[in-house]
Length: 603
Image (cartoon, rainbow, N blue to C red; front, side, top):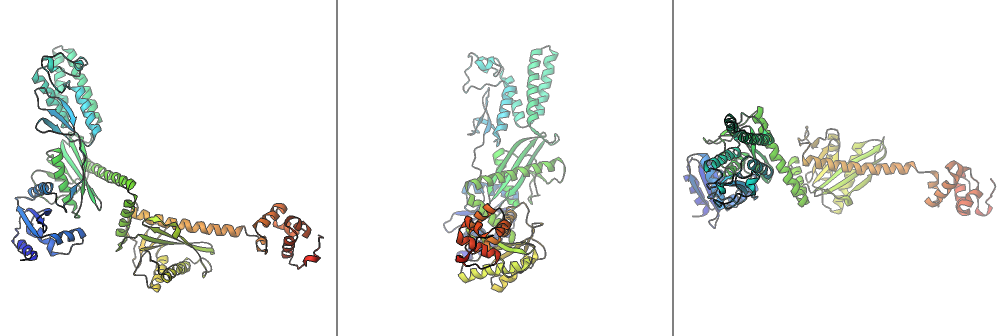
């Protein structure tokens, strides 16, 4: 039995129940793990349809065996899938790319515990809280807790010893010298845990009650100490991001993705304050759906930060049944603002990562922009070679045109070309465009050079249609992509389409098109201005044979104007530029023919 028959038999025997499936290659290695609400339908889809994604096609071609595990719910399938991915690390599964080690707050499991931060958590020896993506927030919390409660900081507690300087400055309750009861010390720890969990109001209330009790018993010094702790706690709460006191326990998740990765941002809100913020990066190898990526991120964040809150704000409603979490997609109000804040964090994380990659690998950015442009224009290949045309004239005078060339998203200035329009009289941009496009690509074909991937014309439908007519006449209209960019609204038109393409005006693809067009305009207008300037300084002296720039400048320097040169005698001209050249100038300006040996010096 070949593997095709084996796969067919397996597919027929699969149940319509939730579960996890595993694909094996010819060597018996797990190459992919997936979950399904209905195993039979999901697994069969890999073999019953044509996949657009190349990676999926490669995966299917390597499958030689399938194994499944049935579970009760899709949520259980999600948990089992996540566990198997971490255990087997299949080649084609999405990969959590966050390899950073974030710090935790640890409370030791001792009679008189101490609190400290660590990047090497030990669950057996410590009670752990975190991890903290913001080290600044964690340090602020640590400093506040140490100010609020005088806990010991020494690594080894030696009973019945002399108190250290930490006790003298009020930073430690000196359990080593038996100056505090274990029950009182443990009360400190309980309050600390409540604050770490975000339940600061509970601690505030307890401190207020304690302060009042001391005051009632005339223990004003102790009451003042508690009051100082209350002020410190109020100051810390004031630094927290407060959203709405009615939001007691809520997690917020948002998703931002690009072609390669997905970014899941997580915010935890406790008693109206954001106490955790974290962004998880996922390598999306097989073009997973946004729902699969979001759920995978939620499970990974639960493993990292502990049990999730009973309520989760999400950007869309996952099609999964679970009693553990109540998903909410808010449309307005404070919860909607929280979701938008989370989305901003995810987007900011993606852009910052992109900037870092662009700085270290500029070619990566160029390829990404070209890929975005290819997708936006619907091209079948990457627009590595782009050429753009622009016309320039002043009321029909000095008509010129320019062509700029971009290779791999960058200007290739050696390939820039200027054109003097030869066959057009008057301001006729359409005829000018017809002439220069014809001349450019006729020559390309004659010389056997490579055609560009993308041709752009600066103009709307009229210019675009003229350029397309030329390409069709040359027989290359099917070999290149042609677009026009309208200057007024920056709209992009394709041949034969009534409406412009919708491209985000702030996208990198649109910005590249605008940059190419602006470069063509700059190059063309600069050439046009030079020709106009050259024409404006042309004088009758430029038409005299044998009179170059040096002699012309001598005459103008001495006589100050063309009129004075015309009124000068032959003798005056000869004194400045010599007899022979002076005779040439005199004859040309006065339209007479004097023999050199009979030249007169009379005025």
